[in-house]
Length: 350
Picture 1 (cartoon, rainbow, N blue to C red):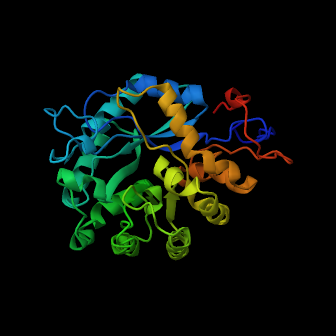
Picture 2 (picture 1 turned 90 degrees about the horizontal axis):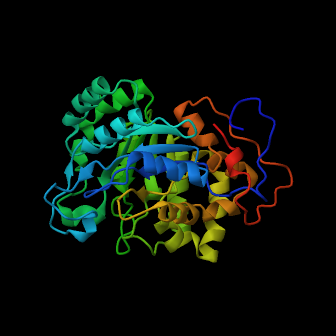
Picture 3 (picture 1 turned 45 degrees about the vertical axis):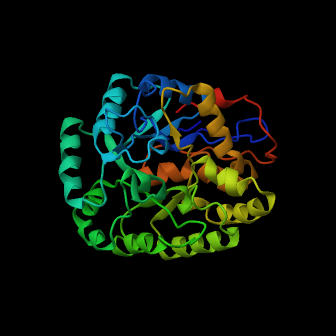
């Protein structure tokens, strides 16, 4: 169905309304044991996800730590490292999937030390030629890791990004950035940082993950948040947003009044949105946890109009951003968007 010329259409009344793209999936945890690479690929195959970004975790807990998740270890430092990117590349080469298209991402960069990024990019590319075609998720400001020794990237450092940003442009590699808007006490505290990145690098494809939202910002008025997102998208034509992470559903989309504001926004800007779970593949999780995350982060999709559903859930935006030779199926005329059955997912072969 994803090959050009296929005349079949996607019937939303009977087929899954979760996304066939997971553009934000962490194949490696912060620390501790990871789910094996091939097992994560099996999760994708089982749930009908046909395209996925293979993120590592660039900021890792030390080997001596017994923690899997940084929130369980306040005071334990998180250190940027390429080790998860190397593990992902090795797993990818050892177990190619005939059913799932994987895009590998470099997640190692420490944006506060930009001089270290380009040399490590080149090293990874020499060791794994042709494997990496994305960068991120990387942290511009992530308040959740402040207790682990991380801080916002200083404004003056942004001027030093030019060499690696030029390298990303040369490679047509998108950059996915985690940049908190702010917190419930000051909802736009960190917005100037993201604005400056976009001002300095207007020709880079940048994905702002989670639409700038976080656990520290769960009470922002939807109208205020949407106005900021519209302004940023209107002023920066190469900017995209991802709607990954269940915090968006739990704190915003699940509320009917908030959802009534977000759905028209997502429909209007549907060519600028990517889906994702933000699943973290630590060994204490399994297929059912991934299935649940895919369902929760995809609930908003069933409310979208057919054009937006095709652009976001069926992968049209993702293919365009990466230049992939796939065509998202058109949505069948008369699809009514009622809650789906599991039928039809296996028919979506890449």
